[in-house]
Length: 381
Image 1 (cartoon, rainbow, N blue to C red):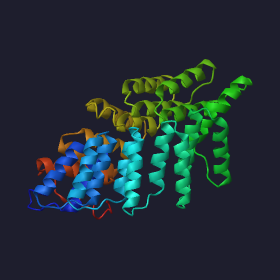
Image 2: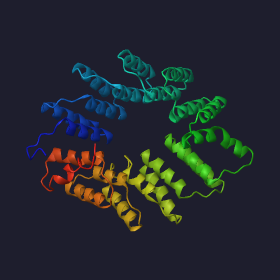
Image 3: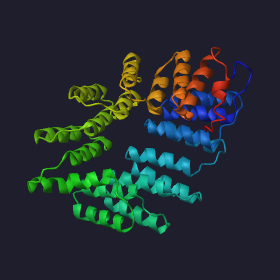
């Protein structure tokens, strides 16, 4: 694009910056911001919010707040999305006083908090075992005519269970059902784990593979891999045979936690037992942020891709996204892009941003621009 004399506009830079941030490459996204300013292209609140969100997700709180101050200095108005990104990141690192200050700041600016704002804050206080403050925020949320969601109820139930207040947790569970909200697997797993599971064992009732799998999945989603393995061993010790679903959720949890070698070990065990893996465990191994591509082991990643094809398991968009992200050779990028399209898998904005980013950084003459520019015709945002 640049080599042909076409100047990238704010929209193009916005796509690239957002794509880099979603890949947890905020440092490169910030370089794009500098290039954008050097070319006298003015960044807007969308660009800054994407950067703030990216740095917050990488736990760089200082840089995120520096960007917030830069927005204010340049006269760019903060909006609800900007504040939500800041509040979400601050809550995750446990700085709840600062998170509450941000809530007060946005209200003072005339920006109404939404359900997401309150969910982040309630979850932060629940994580810190401060249920009094969590309930205060819940009351404030309802006072603003914002209805609690399944997620809101889930974090409160989880917080109450952590505080060993199972009676109130059960009350919240019953209230959400009475209010027409359908509990998800994480909520059910939390209650089963903290109350009913032990009652089942105490009464001599043997949980089946479905209950064990839900427990393992819940532990993995909470990032508690140690407890997931403990439940898995308990399952085997009681003679309950795990199925493909059990292995898949464990592989996915291990991959997401960066424990790729253990995930591969579980994957090998799955195959050794004669089970046929579907796309989910393959996708988990290849496309996890901490998977093969990010650790530089592209040979193994492509071996898994070939194995999928030989077993008749079609790869999904997550697999291709990880492979494209791990490749530095642009011709291979385009080969994968073409293969993806030929399989009928629609490339999304992340795929386009990765390829466009590589082309802008290095220049490109191997392939005509038409294939990528067709992203406009595909409705990619």
